[in-house]
Image (tube, rainbow, N blue to C red; front, top):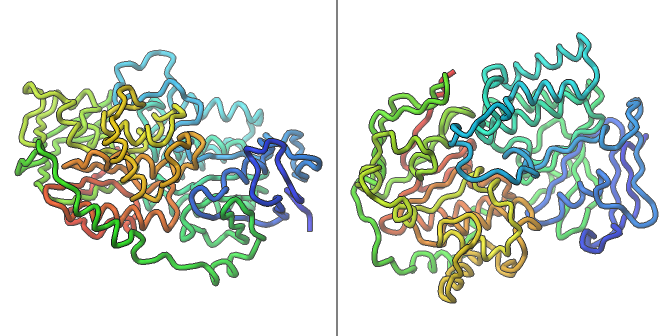
Length: 493
């Protein structure tokens, strides 16, 4: 059988990028593969070797992309990374509130249509067949309604759909996708699976890098597990599923759960009966209405989950609560019993809110030690500009231990896996023991074990007095058991 990609006893030239054992890997003609394994296990490092990002000692990877006539590996293998869900790895100008500050848009700001037409032009193949593919992709991902939108205004799910459309327009020989289903609503996930299942008919073979081993689509033929920086032998999907270890019902051990419950309460907590109150809130960007006449009250101790299609306004709603959205001061909103804009300091308010979101993950571009990222939650900053005292660092270590991050305190953020980064940001959200916990798709990129761990931590934390939760998720199995209220937003087309 013809090898599309073949690596035999591969060892990277740079020691920093080496796996624990030499890499042996083959992708054969007709195979569609899933690469699975725990967060930090080495999945992304394997992909970097496959695409030639980390050169090998001696024998280079062997490629046979026939019948493709494209000469370059980069033209035949396209890789959609985890961060592409948030707009790209190289966007160093991005800042946390940028999505909500659309008054900064100027003539140079690209729209979705600009980006997709550029991607189409780069293929150099303006034929009727290619235009038919373009129309099919636009219809599949409902891109037509977004064509006039500016890139910076897109939700994380909309950004993911944009990136997938761009890549699929290039018709690569091999498409590698890192966690392709994160950030997508249930309907779009189903549509994407249907589309991906048809790509082999177009001569495109798939490699999906999956943190959730229960996310493996049925069209996958083989699985490669990467664990502890070791690439295990390729097995059939049926073989892998038959021997897969089940996820424990609880991961957080009793001792750590008790430690959370015993945490001392702060002296200056807010104890308002109503934590959030919105009265006929409307948010518009240009001609598009995101939220229309929304009235919503969240009472102390309630635990809410927000659901809805991509672009329905879930993250916009949370940005109003956190005052990251400048329109929040034009709306009738009260937080902790205080009306927005009546003289309260937003920084005083933020001290009582723990927050994690896709936008926050994207905004962390500085390669700081992990413990400093956690400590920035005490100061409500992106980056650490005020030095914590020893007691504050002890609190940071406590929450890093709770989330299974002990020993990673001095590892820098950008060199950690995307799943480890998400755990760091979760620890950051909990570190100040907030009265209001706002978690926007908090389990993105986490493996099965860490997803359950995070759910356990959320559930345990919410057993304490004076704790209110607002959470966004597209997966019902991610809802913590403590959820007792549900708000579903409907997208305004």
